[in-house]
Amino acid sequence: MYDVIVVGGGHAGVEASVAAARMGQKTALFTLNVDRIASMPCNPSIGGPAKGIVVREIEALGGVMGKIADKTALQFRILNSSKGPGVQCLRVQSDKIEYSKAMRDAVLSEPGIEIVQKMVEEIVTENNKVIGIRTKDGELIESKTVIITSGTYMSSKILLSANVTVSGPDGEPTTNALSESLRNLGLKTFRLKTGTPARVYTDSIDFSKTTIQPGDDKPYYFSNSTRKEDVIQEQYSCYLTYTNEKTHDIIKQNLDKSSMYSGVVEGVGARYCPSIEDKIVRFADKDRHQIFLEPEAASLDTTYVQGLSSSLPEEVQDQALRTIPGLENCRVQKYGYAIEYDAIDPIQLKPSLEIMTVDGLFTAGQINGTSGYEEAAGQGLMAGINAALKNQGKDPLILKRDEAYIGVMIDDLVTKGTLEPYRLLTSRAEYRLLLRHDNAYRRLSGFGHEIGLLLEDHHVQIQKDIQEIDEFIEHAKTVKIPHTPDFEAYFEAKQSLLKHMTYHFMMQSKDLELNLWNCSTFFKWKFVMI
Image (tube, rainbow, N blue to C red; front, top):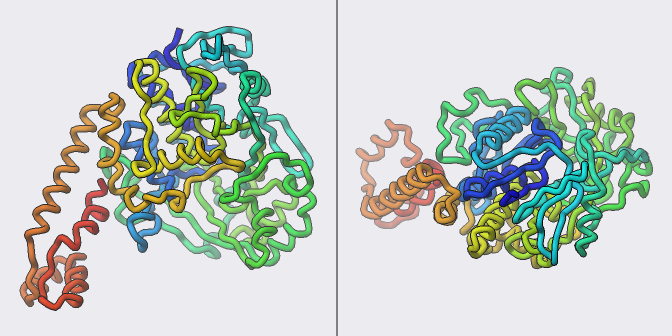
């Protein structure tokens, strides 16, 4: 008998199992392959607009994604740094091999988690209450609560042109039985589709024809426990290139061979991460589209061609690739494909991510109709927390829309549902000026500590950092810098950014004095990152 069974070892499954175990629950994580825990079958990165703030929120609540993303990153970059703090966010290019290894180690080293390498095919209930799961070999394993985080592995099919292969990502096994089990419990399922682009050998790319996208000189981290010596010292670069008319002509001439436009695809694809075929059709007025060339791992000689997701035949993908500057002579390691899978209508969920009609059954991640590692991890964390709280006889933790992007996402899912793979965007959050990267600890660490998920030593460090910020702001309110040559010379000698800020504010001030309170938001973001 377990307290919590987690079905699926992806990004949602890891957070769910670690959260439940840290909250004192005897937890079993069922996965098909322990070496593919938290794998990255698509884009090898963590963070980005809205998503990066979710990772900070996971970190503030006591989850694991942020720390491991920091330690296995190949590049750190703050996006939208020239814009307001409401849209600024961190994105890291990840080493997909090391990230998965570190996540596996985190699960294996967590007391209270047992990993079971078996396929789950049935959710077993009595009187509309979950009592456990049944594996493919017929074994019944009992549990007080069950969390399904099956990702894209339920009734999944790989689609490449007219070819349909019953398979999970990267040729992994799939199951039709689990979907059928959920439907037998009265749940509504529907088909969704996503895809992935080609990977090419890095040594076959002519980077001189592309634009370099380096990491930040002074990288920031998802976790305040990360130190400079913990992370990569010499960051890898990404590169920007573009499609062109030749690329578009090849794709247009072969649209009928694409899985999307030949009638093979049944599910709805992601609107905000469309295939290259979809881009050409939907944005016919555009003469080019961005393509980012991103390293996949330090130990691999492969580059991820972001922006060229496709289900066209391999020979057509090959022709299209060779029209793109820098890829004229590329050698392809693996071509892109589409994948179709079962998801449940998330409107059937409570805000705790528990199924309304089945007591003790929770779902998290892509099974709920979302896309992205970060959205999955955020849901997995909340499902793990709420399964543990349910077992403890306590009220669930429900984050509100003005408290977290995680709260926005879950509220959207359970109240509006989705007809397409849901992706978090800053525009979805009406309180986005409050839900910033720089204040995630302040917003959420109290919740993580109260439920026993945020470790005590980390909570103490967070409180210390917050106190230092508050003391700095209070002190800054009392400090004034007179507009005198001596002060200007001092800041000039220090090559201080404050000099330029001082000058900017002074030129707009009639009284030639600058109150440092005007700079406090700048200092909190740029230097403290809490």
